[in-house]
Image (cartoon, rainbow, N blue to C red; front, side, top):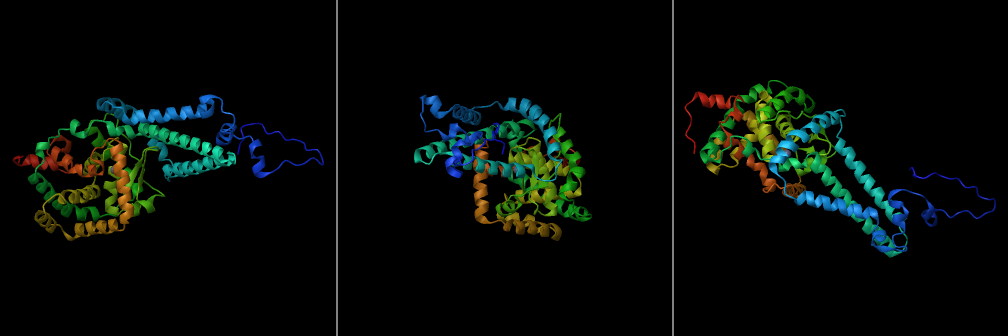
Length: 423
Ligand SMILES: [Zn+2]
């Protein structure tokens, strides 16, 4: 490792005693960073508060304070929407996502491994360079903890700048022709029944050709992603990302996680064990995060629109997701009635999905859900993990509006008939 200082080789006179090796010699090895005299001599001759704490620690405290302010300070949703989400974020995304797509592996995996290794080496060197007495070691440990907290705070600030501020943009309900009055038990039952009809109709055309691999999806329905973003008001749409499998797949499978967006590298990471007919909707959902729709229900809603703007396979994939979301909110008898209309093909596919999800380990799954719930709440998503289910509200609250025009014939079909009374 580069010491950062010129290495001077000393001549040793014949017969002169050799300098001790190992522990006793460590204090004389010039090293940068944590092993520096600032770390080693923390207990030696403190002269004043600044010297005792060290300028590095003041900077660390400043970074932590900045992160706390960023986490707690109110932000203007209109500013985030207009300046951050629609301009700065998209400009960066249009560069970063294609760059991260140049390599087939997950850059987040590389960063995470390098970060964890670096942290371990940093602590090891810091503690190794500390004196042998308890006071000196505890002072070094305290300083390492402070600097580790500062590194975490800096990471949080990078997260906010790279993607996280999207949690604070204006909600879709404020940007679309959304009306909560459209949400009613009748509308829910009607859309649930429609989902079964659509699945029955789409199963054969979707299965007529082999299901696309993750790698084929961007080429096939990247244009639909672009079209839907423009419909939702984007003048410069985000670009589609290459779905990548990750070293986290083993964990994803046990935790029941299908995919995620890496906020630091703006790449889409997927659980490689999801079933072929789940792939289009999963990727469309993650792409929606990539387009700055951080909220889960909004990402699912935009993902559904993207799939419905695509081909038979992506539409089938979206309705598979939607049918479960819709039917679960129905009373038990209505649920049974709707499912009774489902043909064998889609029924087998839904069973296969349920079987896959049963492979999750309950304790890992609960742990992952709890962590994600806290993460969402920390990012000002008041509903936490329950926000996933709000996609049904978005669907029903915008049903029949121009948002849906031309998507799988939904609004066109309803326009050909007399308008159904809405509550
Ligand atoms: Zn998501």
